Image 1 (cartoon, rainbow, N blue to C red):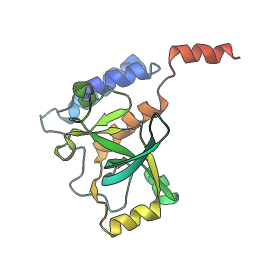
Image 2: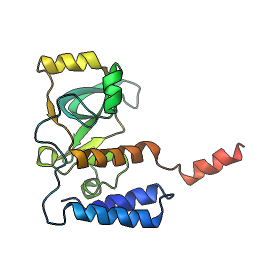
Image 3: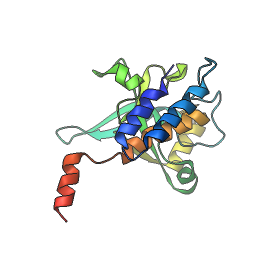
Image 4: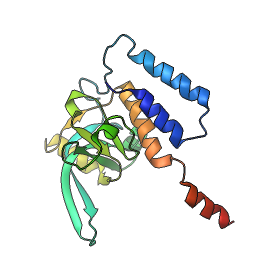
Length: 192
């Protein structure tokens, strides 16, 4: 079971404009989610009818450039980062890969407590050894993804439940919109 109080403290430290009272109320709300000891369901039993933000897919290809500028490719399970509205109204879909907790020289405990800004761990049996890495994203034409699903070349593994969705939104917003580091803020102010 994930203790969301770690995540709330982490977000509070990342967004210091959040009042202390709000932080403490958020912790109390989270405690109520599993007050009876029942584990939280972050994923739905079956995927939503339409592809949506936070859907988990099997074996999406990702591209990156290595330190020598050479294009590399790898395949990984992936999570959609676009909003569902954008998926419906735009021609592209962006994914972040899921990496294996056992394959990396990483702090597994910090990742599982969701204390690493660019990583998201979803505590669910389907994904127990994987975490999303928001630092690597790849974008595809939506029509290509739909064709790959239809041809069963990729599969939708899961859709996020309501609590899983809110959890994703908090983690992704923290990754994309956290406060600037103090040194950069000083430099920005000096330019005025």
